[in-house]
Amino acid sequence: MKTLFHKGLVLLVALTLISLTSCDKDFSEINTNPNAATTIDPAFQLTYVQLQTSGERYENWRAALIYSSTMIQHLSAMATYWSGDKYLYNAGYSSSLWDRAYRNYIRDLVDLTTRTAGDPAQANMNAVARIWKVVAFHRITDLYGDIPYSEAGQGYLGGITAPKYDAQSAIYADMLAELEAACAALNAGGDAVGGDLIYGGDIAQWKKFGYSMMLRLGMRLSKVDAAGAQAWVQKAIAGGVMTDVADAAYIQHIDDQGINRNGIGEVFQADANQRMSATFINWMADHGDPRLDILSTVNQHGVHNGLPNGNDAQMAAANLPGGDTLDNYSAVNAAIVNVASPMVFQTYGEVELLLAEAAERGWGANDAPAHYKEGVRAAIKAWGAIYDASLDVDDAAIDAYLAANPYDAANAMEQIGEQYWAATFLNEYEAYANYRRTGYPALTPTDYPGNESNSQIPRRLIYPTGEAGVNADNYNAVLSAQGPDAFTTRIWWDAN
Image (cartoon, rainbow, N blue to C red; front, side):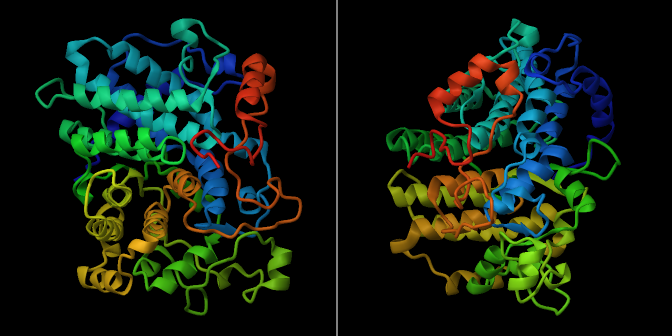
């Protein structure tokens, strides 16, 4: 059960740490923390980096929703500034996660893990911080590809103000090794972990989360390194992943008019242009999915009607039955996108679906149909358990849904991929990453005039424009290694 124990703590953290991590204009400043205090309580720092990874309105609006959610066709919008819906390039929007991460919390994560390393009295804190560091970095590398990693956040600690870009293959190898070491170091009889907004310092839960992240990251290698993926997936399963809906990793936000608010909720408070994508609405309707009524509203005519992606207002008025009137299209249920909503990082349903995939591939877990059924059930139950009790779906309705949509071994990967897509609604970074890895669901790209990706769903976002100036040598080196800084360049684990 999540509690709101963090109210006072977060306010103190905000006052203490924001002053140490003010916005900067280039990587030299971003990577330097001249005012860092060596006596900051690690508990305060952990709270800060967890909240900042959850994110503010800025990057949730731009990277998570405007780009990721529309490219994955969870949401849609007619407004042309919703660039991802139309595969248009907006420099500030594309770089928003990078900007916020490197400016606001990566250097604090590096500082926290460095200061607690090798201290037996802070072994659990160090292990938790290392797991969270993986959570933060894997989002960034999944969105951009090769990124500053080994030298990131080292401006103050190591005097490195122009960090190199590490190859994503090396980043993934290190992140997986970090998860393995951190999980092994966690000790229920060791030091208490204060300031933890995810599990309240519960070490057993952190161990499950660490191994569940290992399962996710290991599976991410499936296209490019099947043998490595299998080894890490099997190691994660042996270590012990999530086993219950209550194991989900999330931050319970509160409406305090400040840093405690949910960044996605703040977007929905400020912007009313987005609607449920017709792709997602139609998929749920076609499958008789009970989530249709809890994730989506009905339109002004009392029916669920998604907005097709890739239309501006003029195109919608001319070509869509609902025209350009927003009230003709279904919105997201306000109960799941308010400023006090939780921010979810990983759920038990996602884990079970990954176990179903592992079983189908012969990589352990066994009994793919059972894991699939449990994954679907857990993904549906999560909305009532995590967000709001009013969203609970009774077991009989889930039983009927599973009976009407039985596991089909001949199309297992497609079924699992589609269900994972549904399970990660609002966790848009993960939904976008898993789509690129699996190819599911089989989305139809849009063809908006003047798009930047040759009418193909983008494979990554573009680096900040400032990198070509302030970190020129390393920026030019990464272009030579990874390929053009374009939407269509595939990152390492997204091999053809």
